[in-house]
Length: 312
Image: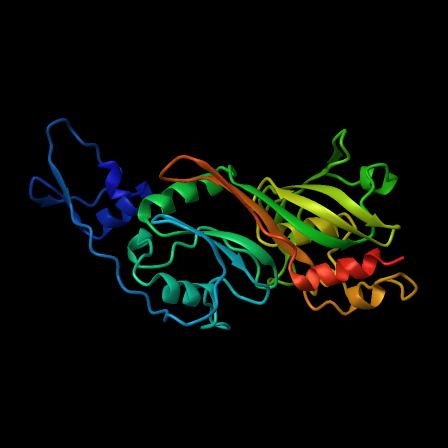
C-alpha cells in the first residue's frame, strides 16, 4: 500500500472482511492469503463517516497547533471522550467545535484523533492527531513508550529511598540519584471493577519512576512521576501501592488526611480531586520528525495547596 494511504494492518484486515478488497475483479476476504508477483489489487476505502458526537463551544487551551497535530492543556474536571455517563461537555466535543472537519479519520469514523487520555480529574498536557498520518505516527510512539511524559503530584508522606519499608516492597528499586522505580503489574481490581490494582499475576506490566522535588517533613511531598508505560490510573495505583497515595485521590487514597497540626493540612484535606498534573509532554512530530516538548505549570488549585504546605 502507498504510505500516503495510512492504512494499518488492522484496518486492512477489516477492509478485507468487509469485502472492500478485490484481486483482478474478484473479491478477496482472507487476510492470511498470499499475494503473488504481478497480481493487481484494488482497495475501496470509504470516506470517514461523520461521528454521532456533536461539537460544543467549550473553552479550549490550545498551546500548539499545525495541520497535523495539536497540543491541549486540559483542565481538571473535563472528561476526554464521551461515555454513557458523560455524553457531552467533553474534550472531544470541544475539539469538534474548535477544529471542525480537520480531524483524523483513522478506523473509518471521523474523530478528533484521540491517541491517549488522561483522567477526568487530572489536568495537563495532551496531544491530538489532526491527520491520519499523525494518528498512526503518534499511536506508534505511544505503543512503544517512546513519548516523554512526566507528571507533578502532591502525595501523602515523603518517599524515602532509604526507607526499609520501601526497600522491602516487591517491584520497587532505587537509582543513585534518589529516583524510586516501581515495576508492578496493573489490572482490574478483583472486587471493584471500576478500579485498578497491583497484581502479582495477570494484568499488564507497568513502570513508574518517582522523584521527590520538595518534602514537607514526613507528612507530604511534591513529586515528579515519569511514565515508562501507560496503564489506566497507573500513577495513582503505584503511589498507593508504595504507601504514598495522592492527596485528594477519592479512589486510591482511602480517605487519608493530614494531621490538623501540619501546616497546610486544611487545604490538603479539603482538596477535591487527585493532586496530579500532566506537566511535560515530549514526542517526535509524526510528519516533520522533529522532537517537540511542551510544559504546563501547576494549575491554580494545586499551586494553592503547595503554597499552604510551604508555610512554616
